[in-house]
Image 1 (cartoon, one colour):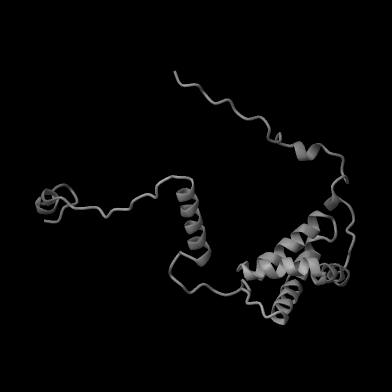
Image 2 (cartoon, rainbow, N blue to C red):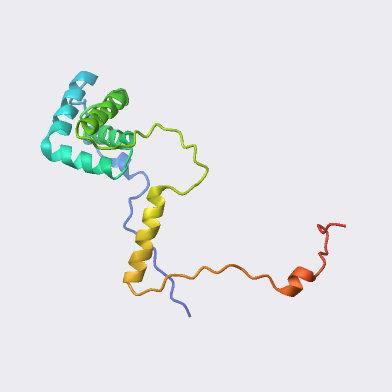
Length: 169
């Protein structure tokens, strides 16, 4: 008889987030920066810092869109209680332009993230690179790469007349 897996009970209990005292979370307190200008000073200091600047440039070189980077920055600021959500949304275009300026000044090619995808192919460079990496990892682990074979039609399938409700008459 097959042994049934026991359920994992490590997850949060539904409603658990409602059991803490109000005001204990950073986003439940007044924000550290109340205006867009104050919050922008905070982000400029972080982005221009040489340690973080190199990390931002590396991420941009990898092809991550500037919109994604800016959204991650402002979402993190909201969760840390630095500013409110509405200030974060107003900051997005300014953060994107700041990141683009830094990339341009260092001669880094970047993806803005606002371009329309006119390519009909669902494959992107990122998905192709991930597929190659997975295939190489499988080969290194000793697993053989799956063989993809074209289906071969049998002669009797090709010569047999179509029958049934949907067959042409």
